[in-house]
Image (tube, rainbow, N blue to C red; front, side, top):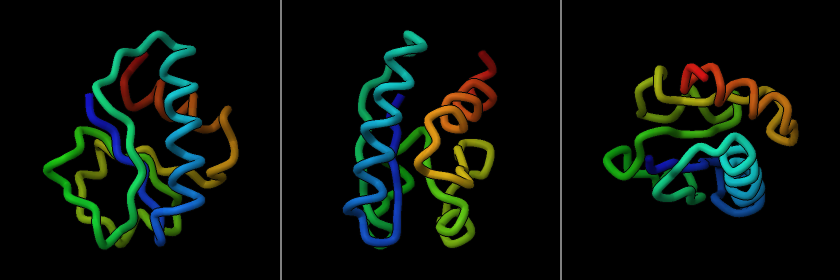
Length: 90
């Protein structure tokens, strides 16, 4: 599973998301091939199986909503874990 964490600039927010996603996946023992951060303009939908993104960025991203983890609070690890569980049905 390839996961992209996307924000407007591809620096701070998406890097924080990347670290949190790795932590949650490891905690849940969910295997993954890669978790990487990027910005909207560099995002390539063919390079991702799932996307983690803030609610502010989600509407502008060309990606299947069913494979998007959309966060209201990108700092909340609890929200991230809950939504990853929902998307992966675990």
